[in-house]
Length: 481
Image (tube, rainbow, N blue to C red; front, side, top):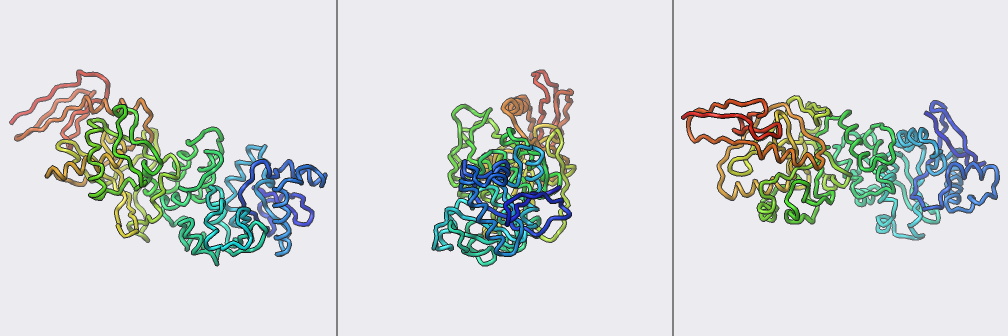
């Protein structure tokens, strides 16, 4: 791995091998469309100072960054617009995977806020700066040890250490992380994701790529894959971490419509307008959604296991581990059948008179006064096979069961589980069909014995026979008092 730096005296670029990199300053800024100077422009300017590219505002920004670095005794500067040859996909991929370390290893990071007017009140005006809304600027805020802010006239307005409280108020990032990035990886995954939940990138894929350093993962760049990039990021995270908070994402916080393939056309629950977490299930919320029971009918509102974007974690800013300081012992891995738990503890609870759901604790809770434990709700759809349910549906059903004075017991079970990660439209019908062909046997007294053919699966806990195929001739049963 190498890095390309700009000489602050000559404005010429020079390559350095990783083992011989000199001290350097680094620039953090927001891009201005069509006014930035790229690698090819910088090369041409080096040979012809009067080249038209030298008239771009982006070049003035580079020159000022070099002047500032030189005045502080640094001979070299790194600037993302021109120090990466973006025409080379290999170089671009290496740079994106290395960028967090480049900012972390810089002697100083200069943040140029082009939209912060001169003589601004930093404590009140800083929050309006575009820099705090951009995805790439998140790692540029966290990684550097020394970070200095400058207004539109390159006047120094404060550094990260003196503005820590203000920055925390704007970004919701822990002050301890801002002052010591070495503790970054001890923060729950969902909480780190929440820091990016209000940030944007020009390209869809970059909302995943800009977070590689935040989660200490590497992956190739595949521009054109769209939001699959964020799915790949989550898959890479669980290869390296057994932090269950990665499943704390909320469907409603992502702005998803509650209607989905497989639900009756036009059907939706009462709108969720406050973006609350999917694991919040207070009585008041349940009451507000009770009317949705009629809309959903017998259709089950399934959802993907993973989030589609960081927006799904927008309410996870106060998440903490349930048992901090202890080594996590839960083991899970990604397979072609879904996320596999060799053995996991599930709370089985009734959601109506005859059906049950499985609740998995995510070993974390919201440290915001409510102290509510984070969990996901699952439905069993096959042998050791589960699908995630939208939490609002569970709240509706569970509220109705409680209000109907249900005395269904809840119990804990420990078992193997495969949780389906993605549910394309055709799978909705398959999942619904598996329940359409299920037979639930509820003997009032006596012993139940069931003779089952291969196309049926017996779920003893739920007393259901469930079809694994599409046929209607599934098997026979008998029971005796």
